[in-house]
Structures are given as C-alpha cells and as structure tokens.
Length: 479
Image: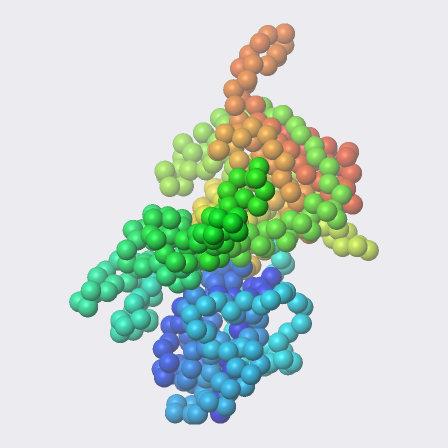
C-alpha cells in the first residue's frame, strides 16, 4: 500500500532538512537498508536509508528543497500504485508537491505536523546514519559538494554521486560540482550553473560564486527595481542579495542574504550561553619556549604528514589539567553538577560558513601524536561535511585557537552545557625580565571563559595554574 515518506530526524538539533539529492529516481525500486537520498541538516550531510524495500512512486521534495521534520518528501509503495489520493491529501494539508522553491514555514513551532501524531520512526521507512543520543552542539558547514545535472540528462543518479570533476556530456550538458546552498541560490535566482567557474576546492561552485554571478548578470530576480522618483523608494525582488536604498538619509546602501542554517544554529545556541550563563574571564600569560622545543623534539621522529602542531600539545595539556580539576570538566544540570570521568575536548575548526567542533574523546588517555592524527582526520571530514553526530557533539570542554590568524588575545563564548572554554592566542616574541635581565621569550595569552554556576574564580585560576605549569615544563605531563 502506498504511503507518505516523511522527513526523519537526522541530527540531534535538526528541525528541518534540505534534500541534497535523490539517489533513486521516480519509478525505481530500492531494497531494505539501501540509501535512497542525501539530506543536508543543520549539522552535516546525512544518508537517508530505507528500512524496507519498495518503489519510489513520487518525489514531493526535489533536490534543493527544504522540509520540516515529519513533512512528506515522497510517496513509496508497490510499483504501479495510484498515488492521486495521497497527493490530494498532502496538497490539502498545506504540504503540496514542490514547484522548485524551498518549502519553509511561516514560523517555528514545537508542534509536529499532523502526519506525525505517531513517532516519526513509525510513520516512514527511513533510518538515520549517526547517533541520535548525542548531546547538542553548534555545527554545520555550507554543505558537502555534490553533482548537479541538467534535468534532461539521463545518467543514473548513482553514477552521478561518484563524479568528482566537471565532465561535459555528448548532449552539451554536464555534471557540475556545486554546494547545496549555491545550488539553491542558483535555482531561486535563475542563474545558469554551467556559465559559472567554481572557486571552491576541486572547482566546486560555492555561495560566493553565485553572488558574483548575480552581480554581473542582469537577472530580474536580483536586479534592483526602481520606483518613480516621487515615490522615493526602491524594492528588490531577490530574497538572496538585494541591494536596497537606505531608509534613512544618513544610512548606507545595503544588501541582504538569507541566513544559512549553520548561522541560525550558532546564533540560537550562543544566545543560550551569553544570556543565562553567568560568565567571567581569566587570562594568563604562558612562556611557550619549552613547549615549542618539546614539539620540535616530537616532530623530529615523525614523518611530515604525522607532525604535531602546538594546538595538539595544548589539547593534551588541557585534558590532563582537567583530570586534576574536575569542576572545570563538569556541567551545571540545575539540581546537580555532572562530573565527567574523561576529558572529551571539542576543538573549534573554521569552515566556509562558520565553525564546527570535532571532539577528541578521552584526550587524557591519548598521546599527542594520536590526538594530532584524529584532529586532522576529523577537520578534513568536517570541511567536507562528512562528520557523524557522535563526532561533533558531547564535548566536556572546548578550545578555540586563533593564534594562526595573528590574534594575540580574545574571549570565547561557552558552548552549553560545557562549563568552560579556552581562547588561545598566538605565541609571539616579547621582551621580559628574568633574573634582572631583559630577555626574549615566546609569550602566549590564554583566556578562560568560566560558568560561574560551576567554576569559582579560585577554581578557574587553579586550573590555569596547572595548565601554565605543564606548558612551561612539559615534563610535568608525566607526573
């Protein structure tokens, strides 16, 4: 019997998902446990896998379209079944078939659509690739690049998914590597993707390429429409990057872009932090000369691709310091304080449209080389949007290092439910007085943001004292 295939919950904080692409076409059959589509969530690109076999009778949400949790995205059943009644029901409930535009709600609510009166798992045949029990965190990137194909192309979708280069076909079309956000912007603004040369990794087309094309091409959706002079106002038809006249005589002209899903999640999560969490900051200067020499000695015995960074050493030292100061490795739970046995360190990684925090599990039990390898692998997959939920959620402590950008000192916002985060600046040569003489030392500033509900001033200061002592004398890590 034909049934609606509903958008499943693919990440712990997901409220809606964007169809990256369907790996099955209408009329094609699929087996149990076979991946039939890829969905961009607020965290990563996830595989949507069928729990049982069937036929994809009708695609309601096409590639690039967005659907709320529990919203119908397709109709599945036995080959040849009539789906007109289900389509009428979906249309009547306000969840009509896609006409090429993203389906977005007028407002966010906590209520489920009427189709989800039962648990989502019982109303559709899909399962997620990842761990839904992971705790919330702030993540997402613009999107893993995928292959875009002209509607009249006939290559099998599974073949498309393996394409990694632009390859023209015999019909003059071709497959193009394009990020989901860029694809959606191109669709909404009638931008021809084949006319654009991608500036992203491997030649992929990214958001800024679409924005550039929209500025260069006279497109009705992105062009400012002037009103008569006596009106004194201008309106823009583009929702993506409309350039508008100032509403006040002293204001600058501006353009607006839709907020990315990642930026919405970051704004929501950090607004929960800076307001309700009573935060205070502690800053300490650390001489890094011995730590730099320690790193040099480690790298002398490693291959080039295995060499460790200063940040890898910092992660290890922080993990060991947390073991000595359990309040810094805890979280406030209203009526209880939760103390974590291991130090699961979240390491902030910059990506194209924000940041993501891969988690080094049990960093206190791992060597520096192992930590380095793990961070490199997760950072690479984070930029490709391939991390699984358990890899970027549930940190007990976070580290944000901006030293490589020339930043000497800054403060970071705590990522709930963690109790603290370290903001690490760059190590720079400074003149200091030692034993009555002026000498040059590599000085690094570290600022700790503390949740005062868990960490008192003296508690945070003692943690930083241990952290400083270990970096200034790495031999102490063995004690």
